[in-house]
Image (tube, rainbow, N blue to C red; front, side, top):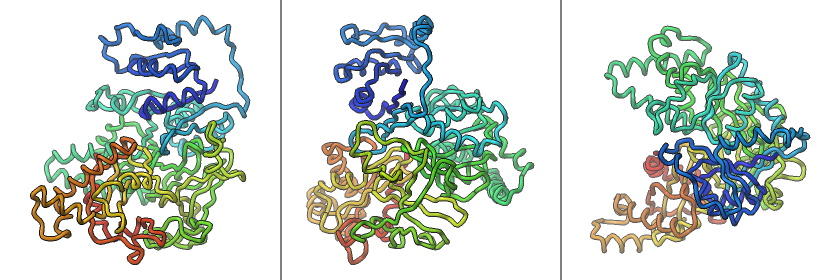
Length: 561
């Protein structure tokens, strides 16, 4: 049996595509999605059975019979009914042992524009990753430890961790982000109930936890806030030097530990970069190891893993067994740099220092090969050929740096496809193409630069304003200004430009996550002469950020929820 996973949030068209491409016969979903699937059943002729759960469905709604599927050719059963039916069919369907080359999973990614791509994972790939990753960082965990699973199983991070936990014979408790605490949207308090020893999350989860704790602390007296801040700094430095702080733990930090249930020993972070401040806060507040990993769906969640007691932020560790990593200089066949660092230098695998002047052993696009690398994209040979080379290397599109101790750091993207706080990808160049259609965008002076990173929930942008269009609007709307330099600082002007860009988003076919949350206006041109544009008039992002970073920092606040 082959398992196919797809995010329901990708929309019904993408879900239907995944089911049809994978020739799926059976779908497991929530009751709320049954009617949506039935409506698309004609586009999924292979679909024969829907099994639904009543989780998070009001009792009144759950008691109502489902309708509208009798003439669809699809049978619909509750999860409980499916279990009862299955018990009577065990003898008719004996277990079939798969071979190592059998296809195990087709996991549809949300990380591209257009249609999602199904990553093919064979049994040997999954087993290799489990054998490579599971032993690292787990010796600190007690026997029969507990893991709390709450991310979607369509996320390779969650699926890989669950398979690894099962392989070690440990316990798994199930929840979702809304049920983790007693104050969530569905206040079940799963963390307090399961008290996990292993906690995992994408950066956004850790950020939310840190901000919630900070907001609670602000309600305390100034004296107590100062005491906690001093104790926090003392403990952080102590941990970094290998010392313990039992007194501070007893008086202060044991209370923080109860936020995650009180037992967390290891906290894993993946799915995007974890900010240095957040990593330090989690490690200090909870007194646990915080381990960052780097991987992709295409490597079945196996590539690198930060070593225990490595407290450096931004470091994702050395390659795991089963992964070979190389760095390719980010220079095109024409000799032109594909991307520049913040100092305006190309990323070369012969570099001896990084963009901050620290020693390194080369920089460039991260290439991965070995048994952790999957077989490509299901029924997409052209897309597979673009990312998976015939010599076994997978092109990640990420720019990395080798540190002298053999650890990898992730610095940039070769292509302007970046991951937001929640793990969603956005394609910068495609967004700029769509948003560039606004009457207020001056393409001659550089156009528009969209921006996103692992700290933002939604993208923002800097816009080279069309002076004529903006001044005409201001005069007709009664907005007073002395010069264009004065007008671009007016909040009403920003609102008007953003309104126009949102209209472009509406008509341009962009996804919801690509909708701009804020915009900053610029009137000093970006040119090749001031290094803000390349010789071929492409935006040099680091140069623009260096020059207009103050505006961008102000706008970025609007991209955080």
